[in-house]
Amino acid sequence: MAKLTAAIIGTGFIGPVHVEGLLRAGVHVAGVLGSSPEKSQKAAREMGLAQGYASLEELLADEAVDVVHLTTPNHLHYEQASRALAAGKHVLCEKPLAMNSVESAELVQLAARSGRAAGVNYNIRYYPLCIEAAERVQRGEVGDLFHVAGSYVQDWLFHETDFNWRVLAQEGGELRAMADIGTHWLDLLQYITGRAVEAVCADLHTVYPQRRRPTGGVETFSGKVSAATPVETVKVTTEDYGCVMLRFAGGGRGVLWVSQVTAGRKNCLRYELAGSQESLAWNSESPNELWIGHRDDANQSLVKDPALLSPRARTFANYPGGHNEGFPDSFKQLFRDFYGAIERGDFATAPTFPTFADGHREILLCEAILHSHRQQAWVQVGAT
Image 1 (cartoon, helix red, strand yellow):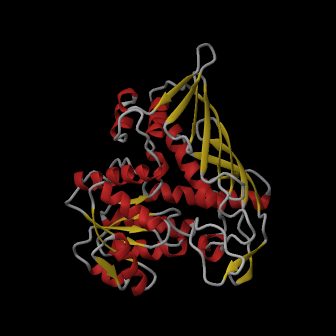
Image 2 (tube, one colour):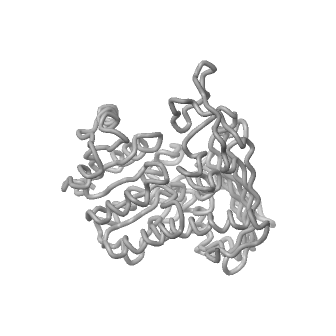
Image 3 (spheres, rainbow, N blue to C red):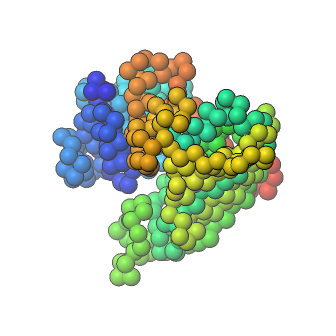
């Protein structure tokens, strides 16, 4: 993929992950833009990149850059994506695509008019065994969908002194745990089942209505704050925990719960899908194993091995059986898919990667979840 060149906006936790994934996918990375010229230069040095951009204008004016990756706080996505598309760049944005469905709907339209590829980084789709699960559903091996259940739980905000910009509604949005990690689960299960969630019934809870913020700020997943660190008390309205019941188009029910205050769970996404012929279960902390359940035969455990996978799943499994693939590999594989589509020029008709339209759908889901929680009632997705 040496024909295409990328640039990264954002130097926090996920920016370097994008850089590493791009380099492993064979994409040249021209440089990086941080929140200040000094941060840009520092990040460029640390990541071995040639350019630390001084401003968004400088990055967008760089004719060598074909694709812009947005790994910035949520409230910046709309403006940065809009400007990148207007500058003729392809865009890959971290989720959520925007702060609300008005912004995300406009981005979908801007992307369509631009003639550029526009994707959202729902990387969990790209674990080989999640692709295999989707292929089994599509081939009819699971049968009719009965129901799905699962969770996405973490503990990095377990303490009242744990803090990150994501807890602030003005920076991350009115939803936090559901929007930050729940949307990964929702995107994944809609992808695997091939069915959209059409209605939700949600209950959300803020464990810490106040948190103590370090006056110097703190990066995502950076660990506990020292007792000597100066702090200030900040009001928090976003949820630490949430549970939502789901109705899928075409039949099927589901339930999801998310938490960022579950001690001992570092980054654990789980799902179990029940069909009329078999069940499937997967855990992101053991990502190289897919459980397949049967009523009248012995259950199976499919260990990731390209020789045993369907053709599409095999394409995104680069190592032999017994050689595990995990979190960083899912980024590399999504980037391979996204950049491959750009090179083939077939990203507009039937894209295989998560698109801005998928990102917009997730925001409609989040708005329905928030509305349902406030009304304590079932809500149709897109009807708020």
